[in-house]
Length: 107
Image (cartoon, rainbow, N blue to C red; front, top):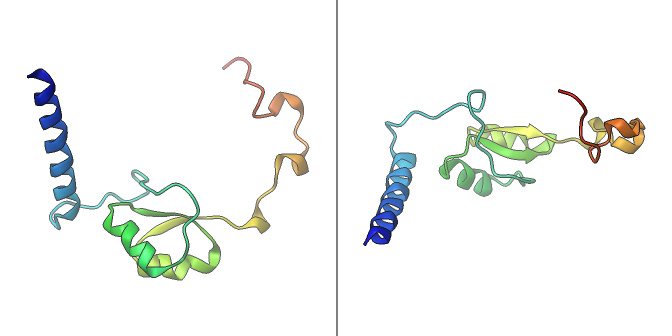
């Protein structure tokens, strides 16, 4: 019986969460306060961006600079990924003590 109560509680939680996402009276949280994004690369397709917005995300995810107009049209923000502005660890030539595989010392 206790298990049924837990299952019912979880179902009710999901139902109220879904209803709150679609309620126009619930204020949107800006990404500057709390970022909600689908993880991974996002194509600048307006249909995909609308789905992301409707799902309750406030960031479109990772997007190329060419997709920023589409992101803005969907009333979202994004994390811009541009290969011309990133530098790999091999290029930087970090010492072994800074390697991601080496745990930091002290704290």
